[in-house]
Image (cartoon, rainbow, N blue to C red; front, side, top):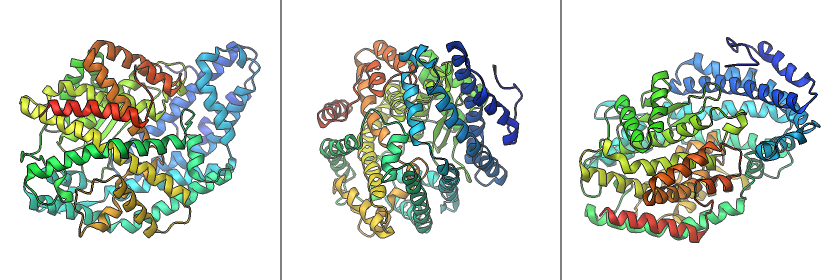
Length: 563
């Protein structure tokens, strides 16, 4: 229910909504009560605008070929967002300079005010048009990727659909799919390199305008990374290389032996090593959703009801199809409080995992929907991903809804746990690569590709033979959406993965106590520090080698129990 804006407001021009910004800018605040009402009205305006843009973004991704949807999103980016930025700066300044601020509860608003003060420091009017350009340009990645199709068995398929063949037992068919997918990606190699050049150039300019030496340092501050530094990221990289890569080498050695191969090739890495056909946990998007609801019901009925509400409102688009942008996400809708899940399912186990992952995000969104301020609902990625990645592992205990056959259920859990370990080096690689991209401003395309290859070797096991396909390996980073659309948002997956392992370990020891702690952490939104939120979940925000080793040993023990 809106208290500040009209219920039927439809945003078709800046002039239509400017009056509400002027109201907030010029409103007289004569008491702490006035200040709180002003903050709540500002929060309502933010929620309405963010949800309006969210729908434009979602619809544009669902059908990248529809120019009307593209223009609708661009309208918001070009004709609304640039005009709101100066007002947001004025609002932030008005808030921190208010003499009544000291009368508000310091503990409740500390995290919020910390972010507000940070935004004030970073604000530069000359960056506003650059942000508009960057938002528009970043969407080009999705447009390029959405047009990538290959023909296999006489049928045109998205790359997500083609990836199903990599799990098949026919090795020649796997090779064919690998070669066709990578050859198709290679067609746009130069286009994607040039796109990144343009993004890097504009991002570096944004950083320079704000007084930073490089975009990495600017981005760390703009993301509000108050609880760790770039050096902590480097320590994470080292911990993963030291403690996780040797475990993956053992997994790959076992794979090679079970497949009876003298040499492992890239197309041998997704097939079941015991010669089984790919797991089929569901058939179609509706069955995927219904089984996920059943799975969540078994954990806690509230979780299942969250998905039921989304189903009732049509807030899901789950299946891969031509023209749909790649990837998957949960988009919070801050006004309605009922989020949207978007993904590209093709019927594989990883799709079921993606669904429970995004479902974890959705539960988080439901838990925070009634918080006082929109800013309280917008959690940092390290916390958001803890919610989703924990749900991947917790839900695994109830995957019997996807697999009535106990051996398939066991196999699914084994694949998931191996995937947990294998994800960590990839996260470290992508993060280390991004640091290099912005520390080395004038690198060439060849230097960029060579650096990725060098990083790949650092986190590789040496067990997979890429002979003849080195060019594909050099540009494997181009499939990572985050590098293009949300730079430096990726290491959070690694940090949260460690936390999720610890949450799952707690769940196996005492399920109700672990879930109570998990819920408590999620309900905090962003009103506490990352460390405090992790502590509320009864886990540590820690990525030291010792902690990584401890958690890896737990996962290894669980894997051994599944043999």
